[in-house]
Length: 221
Image (cartoon, rainbow, N blue to C red; front, side):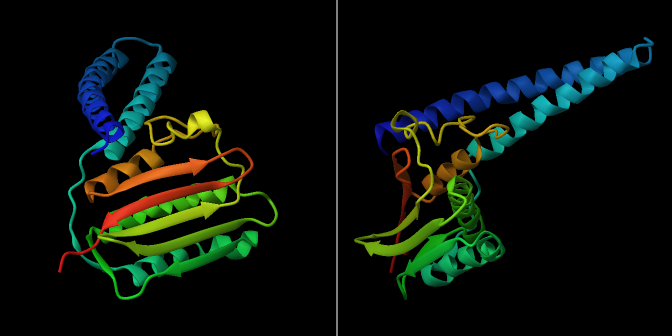
């Protein structure tokens, strides 16, 4: 593991432990609020407290889901078929927005993976690519190739790109440059890829697009 990955794992473990503790405190507050509901006449305040407790608990639950060590149900996954499924998920969006999506995939190679979780991981990344595209002439290129003992998956878009100082933060929990986004989808993606003994990196610059590079070990003979 790289120094960055070690730091990511240690930090996530610490914050997860804190999150579980906060969830317990939230439950105590919620139960106390429900007890007070029957004793006071200010139902509006009780409702405000309940709604905001729910929102905080939901954010913590999403964070824990994005950073917990996943239980993987691994099987042999043929890369070409897997990549085709990713594209099919976005067929409607491709047609609606007139986006050019090119796909290149190596034939006859497999990885040992939890197909659904890995698919969810890549779908998050491709969805981010779609959101970054210009209104016209948007392009996404998805390429899977073999490099030694790894399958490399490159996802490139010609979107608005990312500021140089932000590229090191894109996988951090709650980091997002988009208003209203929690910033957990790419955290989830990185967590799943790392659980497969893979790694993920980003190369980007403003107005020059973004390249996400993923490496997953090949299935052992």
